[in-house]
Length: 264
Image 1 (cartoon, rainbow, N blue to C red):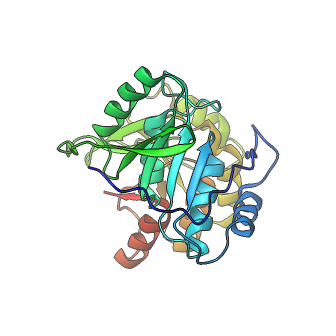
Image 2 (cartoon, rainbow, N blue to C red):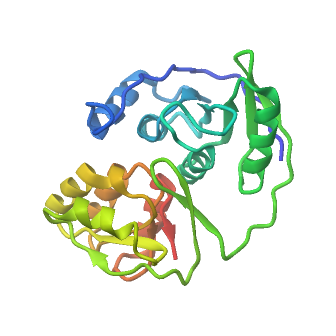
């Protein structure tokens, strides 16, 4: 898969801000800052130099809200495929692809390592890939690999995860005072995913406060589309929905388009 590099109308640099507990900026503040940075309707856009998931997601949402079209996105990483904020490039790809990026690239100073990393990404990518070299986007041609139906890609805020359509999501966690402890305890549970119920705005707020601790594939469950959307905005990874709620296909499709929600 190859793509011609467009003439970018906007190439804003990252703000270098992050959400708690790493930084002190709330996600909605970060999203608003990015909406203010992008000129409405001026695309295509290159969102380059990304290092952290929250800022990348905020920028992607802002590009959509400002009518800038699907942006190209590049991340800074080392030879191991890790950004300075310790985000794995596969996780970054899965999130960016799910949120509508037109192409995904890496800015890695080690040429040999960059080629290997792009090859690893190509095993899962469904959008064009590129490498940043000398400040320029250079397309990296590849043929998309057949997708394994038993390895559906999702992500935490730092790491890639894979689920199946029959994954065991375990016991549903409530968003109460003990949510952080429950998330940490669930790491030792043999089930393949974590399931968190979102039933009120308070639940959204509590989840937003502790979502950073999620270390395995995440299933979000709610019967209220506005609440599920609030949780999806707060989650700095790519979540899935197992169909146990009562949301319409139209609502689920909208949330998939905006946040990359995976619907089983």
